Length: 106
Image (cartoon, rainbow, N blue to C red; front, side, top):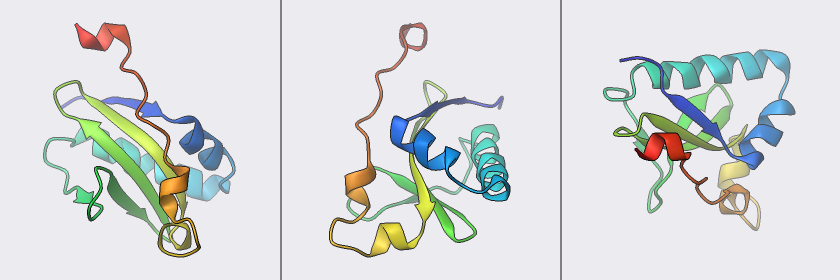
C-alpha cells in the first residue's frame, strides 16, 4: 500500500512544531509507518472515544483514519501526562475532524 494522505489539525501542527527536533523526527517516522501499513497496522483505540493513540517514546499521537479514502487525521501530539492528568484531560486539545478535500470525495 502506498503512503496515505496525512491531514494535520491546527492543534497537531502547533504542538508538533514545538517539539524538539529529535522527537519531531521520531513522530514523523512513526506516522509515516502507519501510512504505509494503514490496513494492517495494529491501531489502539482510546477507550470510549473515536480516536486512536500511537506511542512514540514518552509522547502520544491522537489520530483517526479512513481506510477507504486513504487518510490519517492527526489531532494532537504531546507528552503522555497531557492525556492522563489535569483537570481538563486531552479532550480539550482535540480539533473537530477537518473537512475532506473535494478531490478525495470523488
